[in-house]
Image 1 (spheres, rainbow, N blue to C red):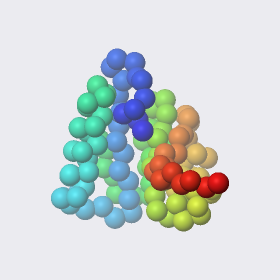
Image 2: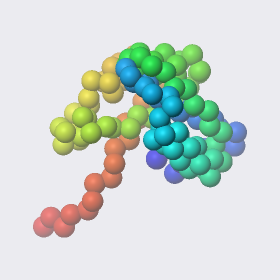
Image 3: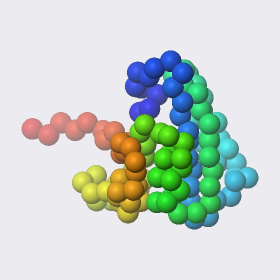
Length: 116
């Protein structure tokens, strides 16, 4: 979603990964970060990453404020999707409550259905 937007030249993105338990030497994590960096670089965005072990509710909001972020984009995870995309999960709710800036929740697009 971030890569699809129009941004001012020189805009920067910080990819923050925060979990209670993180294996920073994980192959899937390296591949994920590289994939996201490639997508954002293709959109001409400068990308840095921050990988922190700890509570995402605190790390994401605090890191965004320290960095001076204008907006936080959060991907809705499967836990949040369980409520049929109508409710926010605990992490998203906490970040929205703590954030110093705008927070946008990004959900996977659902396949179109032909309900008549």
